[in-house]
Length: 498
Ligand code: BES
Ligand code: MN
Ligand code: ZN
Image (cartoon, rainbow, N blue to C red; front, side, top):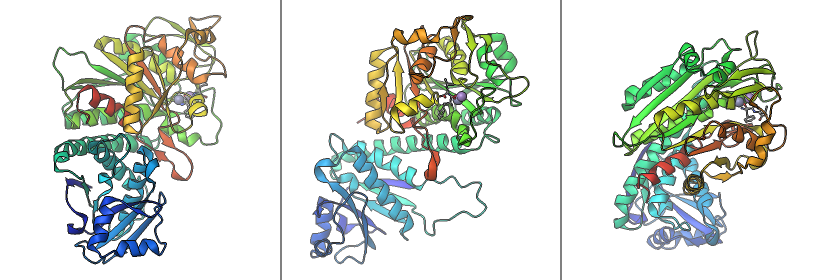
């Protein structure tokens, strides 16, 4: 889809559809009022008849509105003005774009970006609108022989800001929004691909292609190289699979050459059966999403490269399948991680931490300024926070705060959970330095505690995205989260957020 920014009056727009908001109860926004004046109270009349109350989520499409230069006017209900916040703005944009896409309009001129949202700038509204628009038209139908084609799909959106002096900031925000949406698009496509196609080798090829397209440096470590480095925890997960594991490193160098990189580590389990500790059959298909951490960090480095951020960013993706098989790890097996610490594998389904711990030890080689890992790590995190918030753990309060703020700004929120030493005891093993599970209680915390034993050398945060990376049920599909959170964090660091 094409996007542009302008400022101007709604009645003067030559457009297939002009989109304006109505607050509840029956209160026209400024743009709607201007249209109404030009149309000799046509909108007021309609609203008086009771066809548009302004309820959140409602829409009303009008044709041939007098006094205007556009073919159609779309009224979008915004709910109560006092309650119009981040979520309400995104919901209104979503209904607007969905309706436009289902109508015959090829283009739309959207005035919702003029409407004030509590504490938010015009740049924020434009960035968010761009992301929501791309999300709304996203389909994953490459395996459908008969695609339900939209008859006349939406091709172009114009966002209106109310003041000319906001245009430059809005232009920059538009570009950032487009880059974030591109990153999410990549993340969603990789994640939605089934496990028979999205293998560790496929992720490695994707990274190599990205390196060519975006001038990144890519390195892929094979099984023997990982063995030479002592990554026996990571390799123990791959033993049951026919697919060779990979360790992917992708580097973007937009900062000064002597600047320490930020490192993102993404869990890339391309399918998690549980291994010998086999998962139950119900919904096991969703374990193709167990590489969403990998997809997210690849999406984020792509977005960073597209925005030409002046930072150095390194992405590390440990990737493997977790399968049962004659060669698979057994419960009770003991392995030595790259750090030298030994691990008793009491449950082969707690495999994410086993591959991440070696990748996190490897991360220290890059002398990172900070390290953030992203992983669909625990079902317990979904129990704790549902599908709204990502679980955040950190060994540094300043980093935790910055990530929480970035999540708020991006409307892609995280919630901090404790990493207290009191939980560490649960990982005791009678035979090795630690066990890979900590019992039923506080499962997402003990998983984070496990990782913390491999991240003592640097400032680190862990994002558990088990609840936020994909949706189940009728709307099954990857969300592209937390690419927006991470990109907002990077934009803020680079001083590019306004
Ligand atoms: N990939 C799963 C976590 C998961 C489960 C994410 C369900 C989303 C939905 C992870 O590898 C796993 O299996 N974790 C176990 C850990 C347990 C054995 C300590 C879990 O959460 O049950
Ligand atoms: Mn598992
Ligand atoms: Zn897993």
